[in-house]
Structure formats: C-alpha cells, structure tokens
Amino acid sequence: MCDQTFLVNVFGSCDKCFKQRALRPVFIRSQQLSYCAVCVALMAAEGLHENETLASLKSEAESLKSKLEEERAKLHDVELHQVAERVEALGQFVMKTRRTLKGHGNKVLCMDWCKDKRRIVSSSQDGKVIVWDSFTTNKEHAVTMPCTWVMACAYAPSGCAIACGGLDNKCSVYPLTFDKNENMAAKKKSVAMHTNYLSACSFTNSDMQILTASGDGTCALWDVESGQLLQSFHGHGADVLCLDLAPSETGNTFVSGGCDKKAMVWDMRSGQCIQSFETHESDINSVRYYPSGDAFASGSDDATCRLYDLRADREVAIYSKESIIFGASSVDFSLSGRLLFAGYNDYTINVWDVLKGSRVSILFGHENRVSTLRVSPDGTAFCSGSWDHTLRVWA
Image (cartoon, rainbow, N blue to C red; front, side):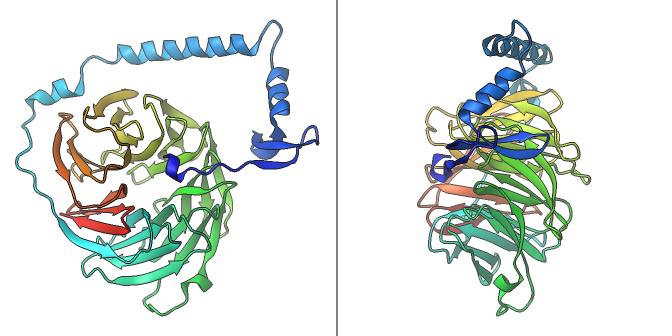
C-alpha cells in the first residue's frame, strides 16, 4: 500500500569492494552483509556453471514455474461456486455501528482484540497506542511512542501485555496493569529490531514469542524475554506488509503478504517457505487464515480479495466487482468462515459470501479509508479502524 511504504537508501562502505556506494542487505548463511549493486551482480555470476548465463537460468526458472502451474491445474477439477450451488443462500443481513471509539488525533493504522472479547488496542499515525474498553468506549491505557506512524499493534494472549511498532523499526512490548496512572513507558521492553519500518506483529500462542514483519523484506520470530532472534524468514522480494498466524494449537505455520504481490506460507521451525501464491496484480495489504486453517484470504491494492486453498495449493475464489476500483486494505473471516469482511480505500466495508463469491452487504459509516478490521474472538462483532481517526464496533 503505497501510502504506508517508506524507501530507505543506505549509503556507506560495501562489505565486499569497500567502495562508498548505495547498499542493499544480502544474507549469506543467515549473516546480514551490506553489498553494492555491482558486487551483488558479480556474486550472482560467480555461482554460474560452464555455458550458463543469468538469462538461461531465468528461462529455466520460468519453465519450472509453468510446470508447477500445470501440476496445480491437474488438481483443479471443480470451481468453488459450483460446489456452493447446493448451499442455501444467506438471508437478510443487518449490521450497524454499535460503538464509535474517538481519541486518536490522526489516522488509525492497526487494531487488535484482547482474548477477553472486550478490550481493543489500536495504533495511529499520531504516535499513540490506546487500549479501549469496547463496551463503555473508555480509554484504559495510552502510550506515546517515540515515532509517528505506529503501523503495528497486537494484544498478548494473556491480555497482560501489548506489542507495537512502526517507523522506529522496533517492536516494543508494554505490560498492562490495573493502575491506569502508571507510567507504561518506564516498563517498555524493546524486543525486535529490523532494518526498516515494522509493518505487522503478532504474538504466537504464548506471551513469550512474537512474530514481526517489516519493510526490510523479512519476517522474524523473537523471544520476548531476552529479545533474541529465534528464526528469520527470507523470501519476499519487497516490503512485507502483513502476516497471520495459523489458528492451530501448535501454530507452527504463518502466512505473509507484501509489495512483491506474493502471499507466502512459512514453517516457523525451519524458517522455510512451504507454499507461495502469486496471483494478485498489486501489493497484498492483508492476509487472514480461514478458521479451520486449511485456507487463507488476502486483500490487495488491485481491488480484489482472494481465497487460497492450502490443500489444493491454488487460488479458489476471487471476490471483486467491476464497480469496486479501490484497494482492499484489511480482511477477516466470521467465526463460521461463511462471511469475509473486507475494508476498502473507498471508505466502505464489503461483506462477501465466501462460498458463493457474491457480496451480501455494504457497510457505510467511516469518512475516510478503512485501514484495519478484526472480528472479535467470540464472533459476535467486529471492529474497524479508519483514516478518519476513529474505530467503529459493528454488530
């Protein structure tokens, strides 16, 4: 999403030729080095065998890609909407704004629910992170970050801590207490450090580990207590904008999406990409697992949302209309998995029937683009955040 993408050019001494040039990060056996563009090209050429050229390797990669697509196509025996023809259509669908949370002084960029189904944490371009009581709309805690554009925030599974970060390139964890007057900044713990902005963060199934995604093109798993890097995930060719942890108890996989138009599924134990999907035509702003964990949805600047089946290893549905020309910034499933909620840059929230691929409702209320959206843990409501500085709870 171009409005939230920040390019950082680093100039300095190349670790290979030692000349002062524009540098790019290169990972060799998990060690990060800074090489100039010339040395990167030379290093690529050094690994070539006799009679090999970069062009020949590229064409070989393309032919392997087309073979993979052919194998995927063999599994493509029936369309999702054909299977769904026997399923009953959804009845009357009514959702309204039940609460409006006002307090941020600028664009709301991210939000997350607490497991208690009541509290919400949100972050904003104003540099503030606020913990809300969604029932009363009261603010319970507020933290002022050292930077603006706090693009990521997350609630710990226990509800006793929050994590956040953005243009400071860090992920910071703040413990929450019942004393609302306590100085939370004094208890801040800097856990993760990237070489570019933090775009997303999520606790794993415990408070002890946290996953982060960054504009430096990587994702990483960190130990909260020590701040140690446990695993790094390299594979995206551009900024990583979003991630989501698989909804299993073990939680050993997660999915990420980014500016390279790819959605990638990762094994947290090995650090390897185990599946990759590249059917979007622009940046992927949001990814969310289907409740069963067998599929995931994505929302993109190409004005579509898509559903990918992990077992069939392919895209199975596209949620779009010719009248929708603005990008989808955030997606989430209802608890049953039958509905897909998607927030768009045209200020609306569209509700899609996942099986039939049809739109069942449009929700109006926000006065600027919808930037974030999450369904509550019990599925009875969902919350959206917007560039109009507010959050809305819908039910």
